[in-house]
Amino acid sequence: MFNYIRALLSGIFLAVIGTLLHNAISPVGLLIALATAAIGIWYVGQLLHLRKYKFVAALSWLIVVLIAGSSGSGNEVLIIGNANGEIFLVGGAILVTVIALLKA
Image (cartoon, rainbow, N blue to C red; front, side):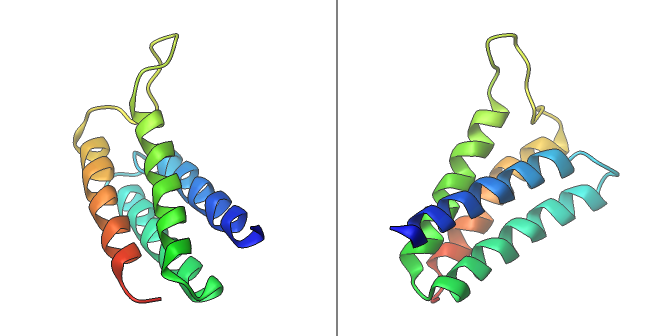
């Protein structure tokens, strides 16, 4: 149970970092955000030794990023629809899925 929580919190943390960095100092921030997500999800698998924990981290990353990309009650959006935002959403989703599918 504790490993599930660690994987969940890791995915949330990686998504928050990526959301804050993806639009900073273009394109360096985007590359750092994607690299952080990929390395972080891979590290969860190495640390916890099972692929299912990488799936938990990747799923929590996806959920947080999708929430950050949709408008809230005050019409605020953290991931805007520019090139960096689209690459971060789509490319990041593909990247964390591929990393989660790799052997732990």
